Image 1: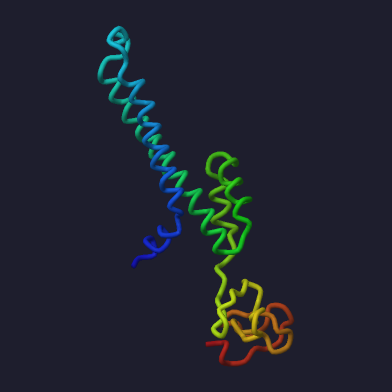
Image 2: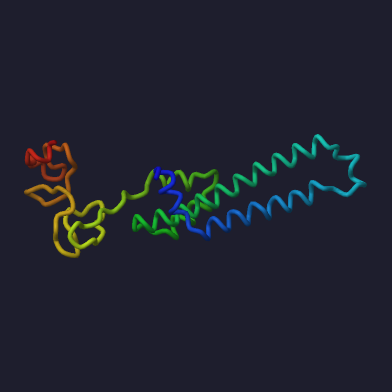
Length: 166
C-alpha cells in the first residue's frame, strides 16, 4: 500500500460524502444556470456556455478538494493528538489556503507507541507515561529525548553514548 493510499484512508467517510454531495449540488446549480431559457439564448451563445460550464466544473473540483483537505486535517490532527477543532476552523476561515498550509508546516510529529504497553508517547517524551519503558533514546544526564546521530545532548551538552551516534 502506497503512502498516498494510507493517508487517503484517514479522510473520514463523512467528509468524502459531504464533498461528493457539495460537488454534485454545485454542478446541479450551475447546470440550471447553464441551461438558460430559450429567450436568453441570444445573449449567451453556446461557446460561452461551454466555457462557463467547464469553469464551474473546475471550481466545483476545487470545492471538493477543499472539503477533503479539511476532513484530512481533522483526522490527522486527531491522530497527532492536536486540537482538531482549532485546526479545522483555521483551515476553513484563513483565506487563500493559508490555514491549510500553516497546518502542514506547524503540525506535531506522530506519536510513538510504547513497545511494552502501547500507550502513545509524544514528541518530547523519552519514556512511556503508562509503564515507564524507554520509547526513544535519551540523554544519560538529563533524561531528555535525543535523536540518532547526535554526539551531544541538545539540552545539557553531555556527550552521548556511541550507540546513539550510529
